[in-house]
Length: 314
Image (cartoon, rainbow, N blue to C red; front, side, top):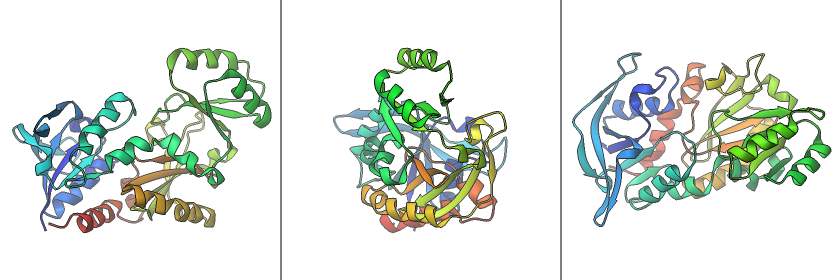
């Protein structure tokens, strides 16, 4: 079986070779004999006769400082590919949404991973609210009265932008924090959309667990422990990856949301769990598969390609 695979991603020269999940996917695809091509989202174009991109043949290596080789760019119909990996990083903005609309024109004849319509309709901090029984107390609003009432009820809270990513713009506010008014003004001036307000979970000091699901099935986990001087556990913000196992509660979470992921065509998903409570369902460009494998866990890249090949036989 040989598949013709294109990857839509941010500039490949900028990735962190040791930790990048997209590179892991590309290395596994190449090892299986699939043909790789690469383009960045700004190379997308739609005309009356289809969706195109200036794609370049790609070869990858697991070598820091020399991890890729690109061929000459050629305008190519994306419908000519068997698979397109949509692996650009957030922010989940109008540019991202537009890309999902364009890729929706070729899916599912060309299998887009993850399903672009499902990605568009399941932003990580909104999709998760379909499972309130699994979550900490959460409010989505920009209304000051609502936020004050939520804070009065729950005390310590976390405020973060609804479409933020990588831990950016995440703030903890204690019950008596005098910065509340200033932070509200800052958010109001910076973000047009509502924000996420959640009850602060002290268990975050023990880690924010990233759990990978492949086609709705458990595919490994890594615990991300924040630095002593930071609230955020994201590895790009200094969080340290630690080996971990699932608790019964975390297995229950996976079993509860798995069918919804399969139904939506979300093959590669990363969920975040703190103290047994689900905080996010990441569907845009999830990470974590290399860290999990490094700790002796499942090979997420191999599991993802097993599912892609089953859905898209050559």
